[in-house]
Length: 252
Image 1: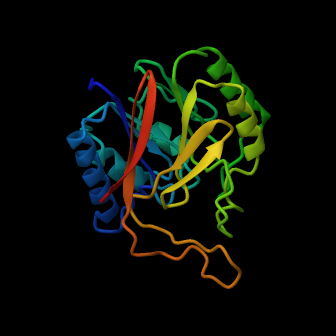
Image 2: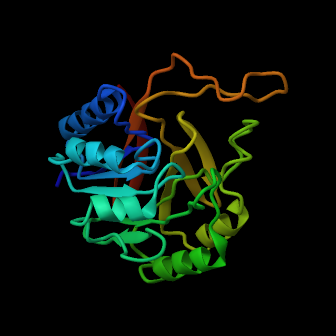
């Protein structure tokens, strides 16, 4: 492991089986860049595929078959929990039932991934049982620096669409984070653009999509979720057990 802890966050890959391999090629480019930057861990923060289809998960499995670092998967609103479990039986950290929430303990920085998806819906929702799980998990290691990952941003982005389809009970999530000062970062995706927000004391980093970027619609009359020519990419989070965290946008 490098002198700093490096987490490659790749999000909203939207793998398809009918795009001549374009989305998978972007994912592979991101993985090779993560290799070049000697990432210690790779975390895919949701919307792994585009339409919850089994053939899309097959394409994804091929694209990540030989990752340059330990790789972990989280669901987004375009994903199907059963489809992920079926396609990735060797990913033993994934619970066999219920939400796909998990904890990665074996690195200097602890990673807590919470599944906030609502099957059949675009928005995220934590619910009390999810908040209780998160609170219990964070309470188990109060002194170890921790990154919490979810798919939907837990703050207002001031975009007319994405604030309607974000984490609808963000206040509940943020109240849990506020009780755990060891949380050094909250990371998420969903918005298809790089953004920075706040959850209690912790900075929140929204990773862009590797496939396409959305512009903003902040005022009435602006186009909702316009695809832009802004560069897609991923985020490299670098830090140490003593702090000094930085999060870098990495263009593709």
